[in-house]
Length: 213
Image (cartoon, rainbow, N blue to C red; front, side, top):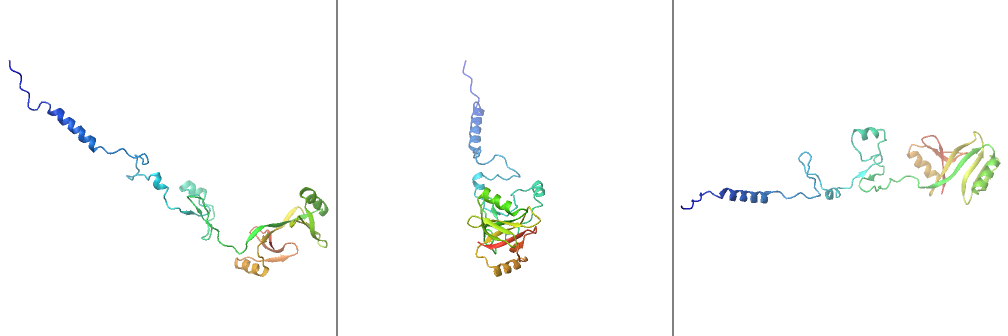
């Protein structure tokens, strides 16, 4: 008996399946980089972290927390809007730009003035506790100024007692006439009297004396 004649299509299906599998391997997309998320929003490919680090540094004004959304807007809605001349802080590095120039260069608190009930008792306190000594005094007006190398506290026997009636800020290159003009340009009025010396009142009405540094 003769051997059966093989069918002309025998083995063809296996060969076609192998070729199709090879074509699929060649066409399959490469595995995405670990820096890129496989998910996208709105059809857009997310920005890689390395790209985000190169974003332009944008300054942030005082009061701007960098937050957005209704919660943040409600929480910070009462903050005063900064002026165009306010110093700004950069979002990326926290570096602050230089503040605009002011008419006065203030270096330190010069002294604090206190109205006291018992002048000698207060003198003894500041001498024994802080080592201050009397540097000068105005006996007719019962004012004693104490300190070390410069005045730190001024004691005034005057009512109402137990209050800080004013404090003084030392100003570099202080000139009274120039200071009056600079304050007037800011809509402020400089005043002078025995108690506070040359001074201007702050928004709360507190006398702030200005003295040469």
